[in-house]
Image 1 (cartoon, rainbow, N blue to C red):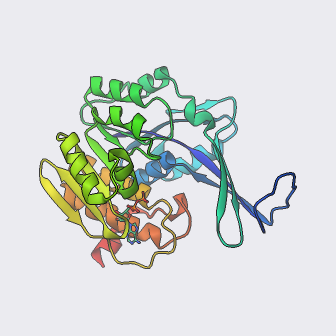
Image 2: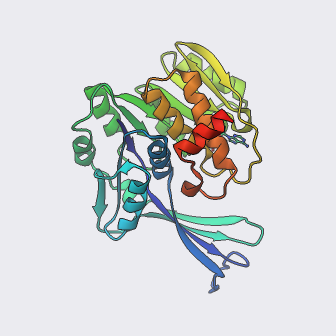
Length: 294
Ligand code: ADP
């Protein structure tokens, strides 16, 4: 199984004619709340891919609907703590030019405890994976506990905070970064230099470098392999990376070789970018299989 220690966010989207100004009270013309957060998105992608996925995280007691939505995509939510206080959420103003202005409150996502992580991994062992992003606390504890139990560890250090990510990367098996994250992490200014720095600094690490429309590069003991992106008409690239990660890791956890896992991740991400939105744009397994056969 895959244990995903990750954020769960509520995105409150307000359509406005202009961003609110100091001292102004502004009526919003439309409002909706969507489930988001890199952690929840990746769990949903894993679940829709057909993986056994246990989400480890925290939300408010008042947000049961979030857990129902995750479960509907095949995610086990028994390890999500429900706390007093607010869930992680974003207040997003969307203006008429589709520009946004965002207030983010991490809330429950930063209130995980070592005890929760430890009990969440109680049944985990060497056949399992730990997956993490960078939107919760508890990463060092999770790595230490997963190491003791022999899990494989995949880390997607997003949003990238290089000083925090660097010491953690030494202890992970698989690093998944996009171009900007790879350059920030290595302090380089082009992607070739970033790739060289990563392979030099972390010779044991398996690396998946996602390159947007250029596809993805894998570097590991099998060598270096590139999978080109599928050609589609992109309308919204939100959650492309999360979709790629979920589908690719689901395939790796099934024991598929990197190239096949990258094809599955790339196909799922290609479908994702043809649709608007975050979690709701993540395709189901049957859609991805049909796309790969077409
Ligand atoms: P992130 O969403 O984290 O910025 P990328 O932009 O690298 O990550 O996208 C992740 C993956 O999604 C890529 O490796 C690729 O497989 C797929 N993808 C992204 N953009 C497109 C696109 N325009 N067309 C087809 N596939 C895409």
